[in-house]
Amino acid sequence: MVHIREIVPADAEAFLKLCRRLDQETQFMLLEPDERTFSPDQQRQALERLLASGRSTIFVAEVGQSGELVGYLAIEGGTYRRERHRATLVVGVVQTFSGQGIGSRLFQAMESWARKRAFHRLELTVMAHNQRALALYLRQGFIVEGLRRQALFVGGRYVDEYYMAKLLD
Image 1: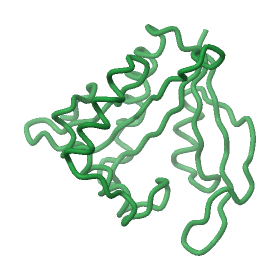
Image 2: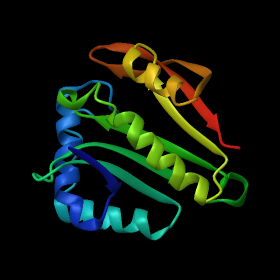
Image 3: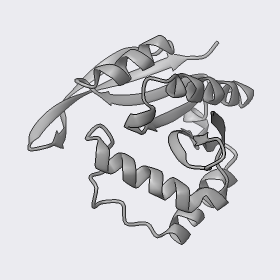
Image 4: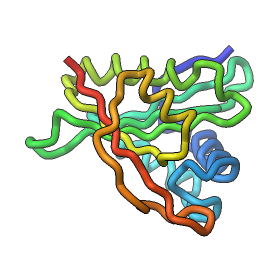
């Protein structure tokens, strides 16, 4: 049983472990395995700052009794008046839990939260060859708005990245 909930600062160590696991097992996340240098205490402080704004949060997928975190969706809202209506998203689910609907459930929780806070535009980027993630985002109502050619350097080669967005009514 996987439960979706908002993160709390006490999750800092488990969240850091999740992010490091994702950095190790996939090249689709932004950071490489040795780039995430936060300590658990620094991660807790970063979570406290993020949550204090009231315009940003992270939803986590937690496995029943073990409490292990196996996925997340971060939403960071704009801070300036001209961009307060939009938010940027980052999502990751560990491979062994992929394809079980966790991503869709994370998006549903996030969208409900975003609507209550009057967000109008949700944005994300995805590597153009990440077909599984692209399919998820399209199912969630996102559309491709543009292509950033050779935006990232991954595994010794340049990779294109799509800009995607969803407008909330």
